[in-house]
Image (tube, rainbow, N blue to C red; front, side, top):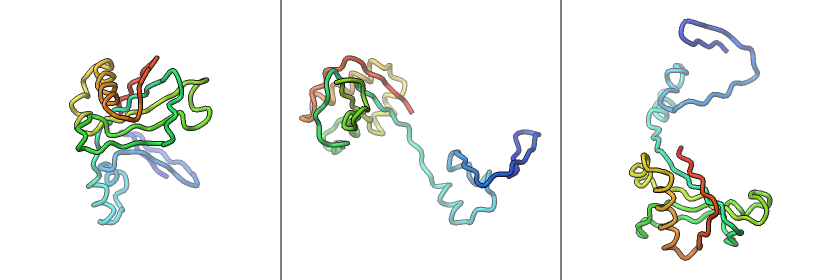
Length: 143
């Protein structure tokens, strides 16, 4: 494989190469891709996401891996993933949920503080029948 960074060029011998880059840049790196492949990568759409990890004082006791909320509920949440369903995934007798905000809510909340996002998630969860959130610690991850 030959690579170039600025004016520097080099080469590497390998059995395979794995690269990660935005789909919209693939044609720049791989000019010999087919027109169909080029079209695919040019059509890739990216969206921001905000995930909120809620560490709970006790296990959730929810028997599902994930729960998605229908849009008609009017929640800012897309869904909730149960992280403590897998043994050893959280410390001791704790529980953990990962709440994912919907795309429109993510865009509105992108510049919000962690406390504002946590409040949004708690308010949305409190209006659902699935869980009573009694959190000791909340981690907000924006991607």
